[in-house]
Length: 83
Length: 392
Image 1 (cartoon, rainbow over the protein chains, first blue to last red):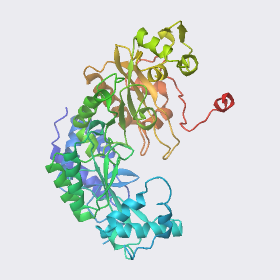
Image 2 (image 1 turned 120 degrees about the vertical axis):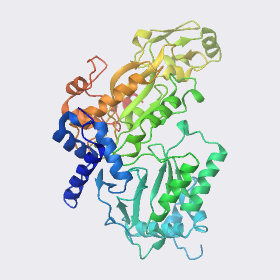
Image 3 (image 1 turned 90 degrees about the vertical axis):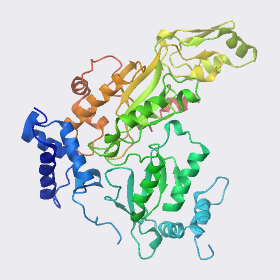
Image 4 (image 1 turned 45 degrees about the vertical axis):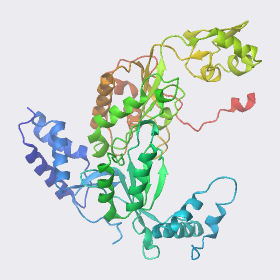
């Protein structure tokens, strides 16, 4: 049942997914949530996934990006920024 | 200002209407970035192309919305607008500001940005136009210290927006201001942390006059409506007749379902045929009022023509009591659940409903099919019907 997997573990696994797809595919919040719910079934809830994403963003490990749609990305200087 | 040569922009200052160019020139004396803004704009007019780059990663810590990154494509030529980000500020319900509140906002923006404002953007927010990346966090801190917050941008719930409702309008069928406040607070995560396929707009109008254009400009429109009969004050109606007003031409002939007739100095309305168009109530405000059994109709799926064509909202719930908002919260969350599950990237909810089919959608969100759920409302807000011209 939901709560069996800790929020920290979900956040770590989400971070791995974001890191692995960096430069190839922009992952959305729903992509990360679906990846976790398909892996763990009802051991994680959507709220757990929301909390994990919040943890990733608030800690600065990931940031929100926007290019057509919003995505969760590794922190970096965006290509269009003027230094 | 003497070094500022903008002959094409100067043309826009001519004529009867106020010009944004005049405003920008006023600010250019105080803010060098505005001077470069005018220069870049003049070059755009000359070259017939825009020189803005959309930047996607700027924001404030923790939030995924509220800041729209913008950079000049010519930073060396126009260094003042090298960064020119936009900040959306969540507006008060119904856009009621005190003078103190406005001064507070202006002081913050004078200190941290260009001083240029847009009141208001089409989503409803107050928009701060133009600042550099390093000023985003200080702007956010200054706003939150005064109890302001950012609005939505990106694939999230956009800032909920409403008409003035019962604060100033006798037609309001529910408290639009209270509902906007409620939704803004209840869905903070959805507003500031993008988790949808694409944007989701909620607009609240207190009556079918629909002053927020919810039917055309919001994914979820909550439009005030009544169930019982239009309230009639026959004495006040008789005064309209006595004043010589053309009741037949101005009201009776313009009723779309022809459910109004006049007998002597009395107005008769066949309420079973009334489609709540508001024309008679708007024309005879002293004699006619909306009914007493009030609530809201919930429409879903409107959008402007970005990505796919424009859509009007379709009725999902023809009447919902708005005494408390629990039933609405429940419906919104079921809609989001379905959209999460079945929506595609950059697909608005209206497009999703079209793709999966209305029958599948209403089954998916647990609504019973009813006659008011039409499959195809007028799907293009820009159609002009020929017969209107023929009548004229």
